[in-house]
Image (tube, rainbow, N blue to C red; front, side):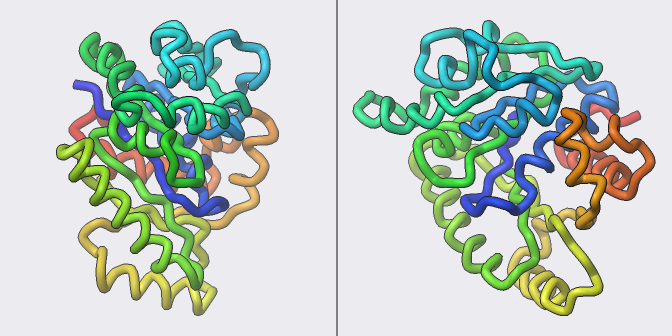
Length: 260
């Protein structure tokens, strides 16, 4: 069975794309066949797995507006078991183009149902844009579950509360099976007082949703994208790589994927 997971946070700079890339990679390393869908017009997930953003006829934009089938936009990466539907700046127009369409919230769901029925992929990982518009709503409507990357900073809880309201609305209106797979703490430093304070507050309200694994702020994670490589292939035994391996194990235990 295919597990469709969206990485979502309306705030940018929280490690959403970095986590989507590296979770998809770690799941593929553990012998799961994984499709990473870049639904962010910035295209960072695309370049982060070594795929150029500007040289493809079919992208997430064409998939979302129905100009091509999802399977016709899939590219093979150089990393075993990891595939991608690329994105570029053209996707930014999708919100506007879908506005007047009937059932516009279900366009991506209809596309991914074909892939899910074929059972080609164990996981489909969706990297959402840092906003709550039709692209994100489509992604959540098409997903089984959500991972929320969260940086331990002052405004984190306020943003999380707003996001929870959006998720609740999507669940009520479009996707009753949607659930939160977990909240992922990113860019964490135990030496920072504010980080520990925010983590303590998150635990008060969402401890049952928190992943045990926290992703540290490391130079390695910053460097890897410039080489078009997930951190596992850039620095296999680095702290960041080991943390994402631990996170992948948690995700697999919660979704029933392959663990070797």
